[in-house]
Image 1 (cartoon, one colour):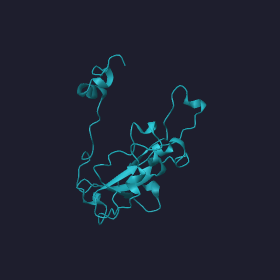
Image 2 (cartoon, helix red, strand yellow):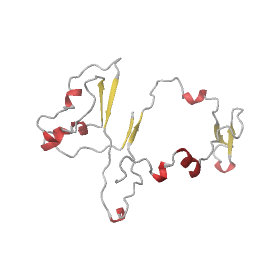
Image 3 (tube, helix red, strand yellow):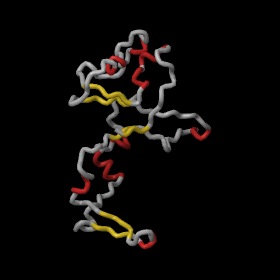
Image 4 (tube, helix red, strand yellow):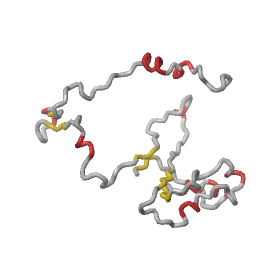
Length: 174
C-alpha cells in the first residue's frame, strides 16, 4: 500500500470529542475482516464522545492474528490548507492530492507488463549521448496499435446529456 496525503491528527488523544474519530490517529490500520465492523465511525458519534456508538480502537486492540485471513485496510487521508489571498474567488487544488495505491510486493517473479503482447521498449540510441535520439522496439506491433480515439464533447454529450444540462437532478430546486 502506497499512501498519499496523510494529515496527522493534531487533537490530543482522548481529549474532548477526539474519541469520536480515533481512526484519525493512524495513517493505516489493518484488521481481520468482520461483518460487524462495517464503519470506522457513525453519524451519531458527535452525540456521545465519552461512549461512542462505534469505537474504532476495539477493531485493532484485540491483536487478532491476520495471517491467511481476509483483511480490511482502514486508510486515513487528507491534507492541510493554509488560506491565502490567492484562494479568492476559487481555491485552487494544484498539488493537493490524496489517495492510495495497492501495489504488488514480491508477488510476481518480474514486472507483469513484460508479458504484455503490446509491450514497447524505448532506449537511447547511444549511451551517454541523449541528443542522439531513441530507439523504439514495438515487438512487431504497428504504429497505430496503442492509439486510442480522442473523445469529443459532442460524443460525451450524446452518451450523457446531463453532464451539461442536468435534466435528471433529484430536486430541481437545488
